[in-house]
Image 1 (cartoon, rainbow, N blue to C red):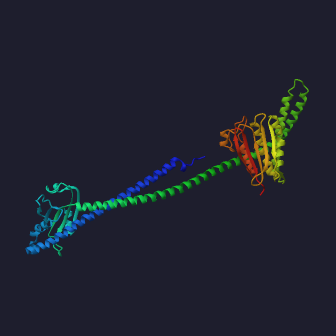
Image 2 (tube, helix red, strand yellow):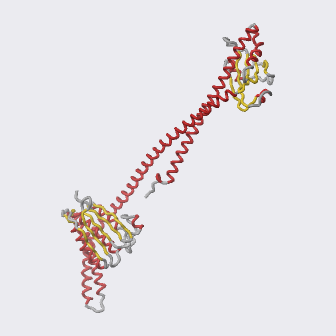
Image 3 (spheres, rainbow, N blue to C red):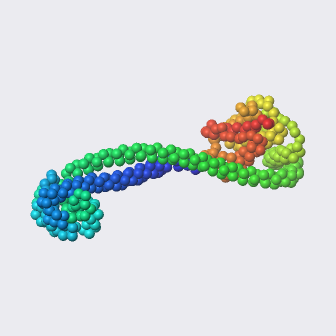
Length: 464
């Protein structure tokens, strides 16, 4: 019998492993998505700061041009003046100014570098786009050599142009303390990761419930498939045994026919020898009498089988009651019980009747079981045959012995051909009895087998 892996610890551990792995993969996906959202959100926050600075610079340029009354081609002279006004805004720690030719103009508080912006950055500035970068681990002291050593700066590049003009007259690089933007970003991070945690938890619960439901459906399907496979294997074994017993029946019919006359002659010879030697004081009359009895038993068995085969082929219809079946079997086996010094008791009464075909097959089954019971019961023990009506209709026969019970190896392969535990046994007795019971439209089952003895139940179903 194949074990059921779905209910075993390894099966449960495999399910738990799959669930854990799925939840971890889902958590990794949520984490990656959250980081992408955070990156986009931080870019928006820092870009907003740069756009605000660009708007302030544009307003300062307009004011400077009006105050100095400069023509448009001389506006670059006022660039630094306008930007320096902007640098007075809170949080600005440094600024560098470049003209429209990408040349360094000036810087505040001191010229710390005249390195021009990168080509890609300048192209974006010419297109009117502001640039913002967050440097979480950089301080003003590291960038311009002055200011606080507190880390966290925002680098903002803004195009310089007057209001209403699309012509860029320069660009400015601002270094701004990112404390306010960092605080806002931290608040957004807290909310974002909280939402991600809630989403992961809710999603994990849904995934676990869905997978557990799916696993249960799969396990149920596996159990059904495994049960069907076992049924198919059992049916195949029974079909093979039925085919073998069918072929064996044909051979047996021929064998019985060929053995009948020689056994009858042998019986007559043994009986004559027993009578002749009984008058000789040095004879072996007792041994010959025993041989004659054994020969008679063999002839009776052959006649029984031939009678069943004849009834099977003749088509003659008749019925026997349960009590008649029990009496017929008892008459055939009482001599064997007496020979083994075993007490044989027939009890019960069954007035229900079955067809002669079923009755004949039932006689063979009960007789075989009783012979096994006689062999298993020690001298002085009791073998009991009980007949009665079956619960669902039909006849029921209980065969009980007083032996030590069936060995575990026999119980594990009950009704299957196996090696016999009896000297000279073929291992086919119970298997053939089971097949004969099915041919008779009935069932044969083991009721109990322990230290007090073994009990079999044969049920012959009522005619449909």
